[in-house]
Image (cartoon, rainbow, N blue to C red; front, side):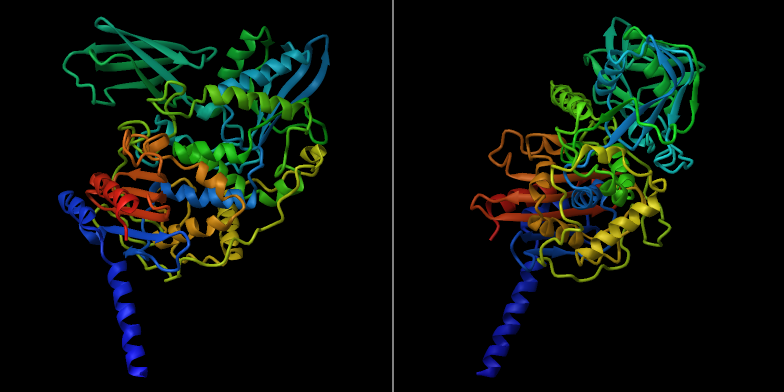
Length: 578
């Protein structure tokens, strides 16, 4: 009898391992057709309530996840900062205000708001005018001290510093530091409409049209800064209609000052001084404060449209979590006073005209800081992956690395880092206490590792650098991404996380996949794309009601051709998985 039971156990174990290592034939066929060897593929598929995976292929290998790394950043943020977290940006008067005239400086202090857009900034400046400020006879002073000052090279990632996704972090980031260019073919020439207006700068448009260019061709024109002239040169296809592009050209402080000056003049104000860095007056209450929409809303842009600049800003904010809790930012609510009410009105406006949308959504614009090429068609083709400092192999032909811990997926529920603050927290907390040490990458990495430890999640292969996935060095395993996705199912904030993910065939970076198909709407998937990396991670709901976690990452030379194989797995899980 004992021999029979032991044999039965071995048979079950062998069967489980066989199932876990077998890919559906449509997936195998798609990989063969794309010339992608299985050694370059990492997959883990598991039911959300199961202890063992249905499919596991190279799931413990440390690999580059591209933008699926944003899942770790946003999940950690929901758990440490909380879904009600809001960023503040403050304006101080450094001088006497009398009869609308400020005899002194206007100081702006930033706290890392990832999405202070032109629309929101205009409304805030309008509120400053309503308060009585009209003429500024001093300087415009920018206080970035909440983030540590580091030298950032916007061209370091792919040698293209004008790409909007290469904009660096800034405690006083305005409108992603991006310029929106709308090009209209006009005979042999073009009309160039640029937004926002930049006071003191002139657009010099030399872009022409060409009948020899095809509509799919990109990067056929360039922008450069010559003094205070923004010079546009090159050609666009003649018969392809109007087009929209985003780029970043000005240093961030100069961009802020040029945008502020243009809007301030539009609102009937004047400024006589110059731009300079500085520190907000110590011990004084701000003249006015703008409070951002809550984190739960912000992560929708980060995940649905893979907004890299916003993800980096959030990543740095994580390093200040303890300070935020002490200063009442974790549960700001609509009863917090005039500033919060103002933020609420901005949120309403934002829903109807969000800059971080898609190029096909008539109600919005392409995300200027998107990483995935599916977000802004053909927007990024970075150079080949390089060897990271961690020593993990990272070439486009061989991305392997040290194996991760073989942790069973399906473990205890999330352990809250701290009790969720009640919505009745007093608004005076926004003014209480001193600023923390300036946020930096090392502190944010430490916070995420500490949070993982509190959840009993051990990811020894994890390599973090900016939290966005726009990286040559970032590493994590497919198993541990799946473990995050399963563990967050037990979080009180799971609904916020899943709602932030792109909906298959409907929105975000997967809006084109399975569009007009019966499968559309039955998956929430985060995507990632780099040259040499193609990834998806999220949830698929089958027709029989089961919900699957799926992580499918390809690292290697033909990774860009992996989408049909990923789609084949999605379709198989939705319709045919056993």
